[in-house]
Image 1 (cartoon, rainbow, N blue to C red):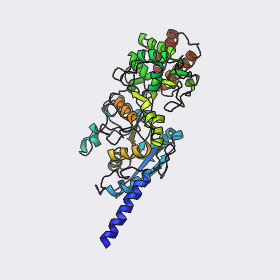
Image 2 (cartoon, rainbow, N blue to C red):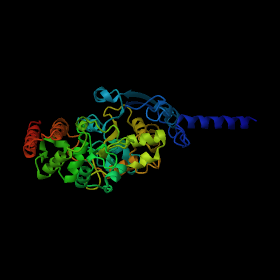
Image 3 (tube, rainbow, N blue to C red):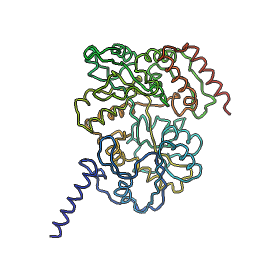
Image 4 (cartoon, one colour):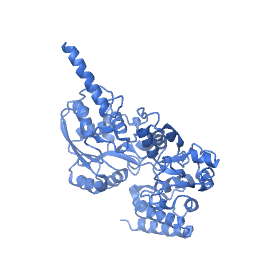
Length: 459
């Protein structure tokens, strides 16, 4: 009788967990039996940018979400019962200032943050290298993570590429996505799996104007014309082989700038021509509110996440709409583009390095990435992310792009890129969209002179 009662209770608990996870077939532990793995003692202070700590409701799907606190209770605290966690959640709006202060004061041991911040803090000497911890830990396998971001990103590697300071845990999704219905309406051949910038421009021009079937205004192209990190600009520079600069971020003073090269002229010529095709609001990052939805009127979106189409599917299970929007690779030679990487990093002043490493491993693990994908649609950083659903073609494409990714000096980790190049390029795009593009060679010559002066003035 007692066994029967316990069986009934167990079944009720399983059903309850399934309900809490929005109908998922697995529970918050990822379907893995959780057991103690270490009796290590310690206290680790964790500063997280934007993670949801408490249970709640997904704003897009309406499904219940399990917050990090419950996840940790059912996993980490069983695996490491003697490691105490002090978790601080910091809104993205003021995360750099807050986490910078915590690094300087020694108030936290490990951080989840934006890749650009991590790279800057490393160059300021605020972060700890992880190579010795990785080398002596036989349970940690660096090859678990995508090669392109584990070993070739300024968000995880030192400027000279010799030291590992971050473990990637989340990606931004940036790919080319096109609307198959609009292509069919206009009688235009579908995009290649690895489209060139020339192909995109040619086909986008053919689909700008009155739709021949619906009579509605269509726009051949869209990207965010005021992007803070210039992700589309970076992808276009890769496509044209325009390096922009040579050297290392370890020695900004010695960077050799090539911002007025013939290849960069080609980049700006392309942007000038392409700026005529999106809706006017693109210069302010607007105009694509319906992309991924039934009322869409844009044929091709650059650096798109596919988020609207995927959210529509999760909410309404509308397979027709999901099939309508197709992702392909980005425009670099191997299909690469700029890949946003958010890592975990360890403070130089971490109080308990060994315990902090165990926590960092756990929070970047397969199990935690699976939890974050299923609860919050985070894009994982793993080679074998087999928990990504069959329908989620956008995440799968983002993983393929990340695997061939690499960092160049045209990157948000480059201070001059962020402070001068991106504002200048965004200004150029805005002028080009209104038909008043400046002379390209003069524009680039001025930018080159500013870059050289910036490097020369460094100490």
